[in-house]
Length: 147
Length: 147
Length: 147
Length: 147
Picture (tube, rainbow over the protein chains, first blue to last red):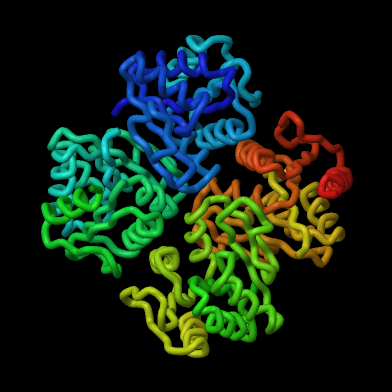
C-alpha cells in the first residue's frame, strides 16, 4: 500500500503552500488525504493531481458532491467535525498548513494516536510539533519522521 | 470520479458471493468500498482487485494495519460501529451480502440517506430492499438503480 | 445509578404511545434516553416528566437549543445520524415506538451491542425482537429482559 | 434547564484542582459534564456530587460500566476519541484542568463551536484561551463568560 499523508488546515492565504505540499507528497509516492472541502484541502489535492498522485477526501457531511473536484476517492462520513479524527487517523503522518481550531483538533488527535505531525509556519502552534518554513521542508520532515 | 459502491455484510459462508460481487463491480468500473476488515469485506476487495479494480477500506479502529490486504486506500475512522454510517454514506449504492445486525445498521443508514440498497439472498431482510438470488443479479440491480 | 432505557422511533401517530412508554418507564424508576428531538422523542420525555422522571437527550447536531423542552440533560454529539449509536448504546434496554430507517439503525446497533430490544407494534420489524401490542406490554417486557 | 459545564483534562496531579472545580460548579447550579472516566474526569464528578450537584459522563467506549462511580447519567457513545467532540459540545462552557492531546482536541472543538473555554494553569496552551491560577478563578471566569 502507498503511504498516506494527511494535509490539514484552512485559509485562502495558504493555498499556494498547500498545493506545493500536495505536489511534493505525490512526487514522493504518497497518497494525499484531506477533509475534502475547499481552500487548503482543495489545494493539496490539486497539487497532488498535478503531479499524477492520488487523493482521498474524508468529508464531514452526507453528500459526496461536497468533495472538491480533485478528490479521487471520497469517504462520506456524515459525522461533522468528528471526521477530523478520521482525517488525522488516516495519515501515516500529518502536515498542517494554516488553519485554526478545526486544524488544531486534527493535530491534537494525530498526536494522541501517535502519528508524526509537522507544521508549516502559520499553522496553530502545538508543543512538540516541529515548525518548518517551507512546503519542501515540511514534506521532507514528514517523510523523515515516517522513516 | 468513478462510481463507488459499498459492499456490506459478514459471514464466511458468503465470501464466495462477496468476491463475485466485488469482481463484477470492478468490471463495471465501480470502486468497491467496505468496512475494511475480514470475511465479506475482504472477499469483496479481493474480487475487485482480481479484476483490476480499486478498493477503499473504512475501518472502525485506529490502526491502518487492521485493513485487509486487498485494500488500496484506507480511511481509519476511530469511531467504532459508527463507521457503519460512513460505509453506507460512501456508496453511491449499497449491496448487502450476508451479515447480521451491523449490516442491518448499514442498510438502514443507506436507506435513511437515500442511497439505493440491494440485498443478496441471505442478507438481513429490510422492507423495500430488493432481494436478488445471485451476485450478478445484485450487481445488475444496483447499477440499474444508479441509472 | 438509575437504569437507563432508550426510547427510539418517530412519527406523530405514535406520540401517545411514546408518552405512555415514557410515563411507565419513569414510574418504574428508569431514566428515559432519546435522540432529543420531536415527535416520539419529545413525547417519551414528556411522559417521563409528567411522572416525575428524568430524561436525557442525545442530539445529532451542535446546538443544545435543539433539544425538546422536556429534556433534563442534553448531550450534544455533533455527529449526525451516528448519534443513533450513542442513543442505542446508552440504554440498558431499548424500546422502539414507530419509526423508520433511523429507528432501524438504532435497533440494529442495540442488538449488535447486546442490549435487549423490544418493539411496540408499528416499529420496524427486526428478526428476534419481540413485538408488543401496548405501551404497558412493551415496558413490562423491557423490564423483564433487564432482569 | 440547568447550565452544563464540561470539565476536560487528565493527570493524577490535577485531581485536587478538578475536584474543587466540580464542587464550585455544582454550588453555582451547573451540571458537570466530563468524558466519564478516571483522574480529572472522576475528580470533577466527585467534587460536584460532594456539593449535591448533578453529573453526566460521556463515554468513549461501549460499556456503561466504564463510567466513574460519581456519574449520575451516562451517555455511552461508542465512538472512541470522537466523543471528545460531544464532551466539548455539551458544555455551555468548557474548563480545562491539566491534560494533554485529548484535552487539546476538546478545547479546539469547543472553540470551533463557539463555546467559551477557560484553562487552569497546567492545561494545554491555546491562543485566545484565558489561563487562571486557581479553581475558583477558572470557575468564576467560565461563569462570567456564560453571562
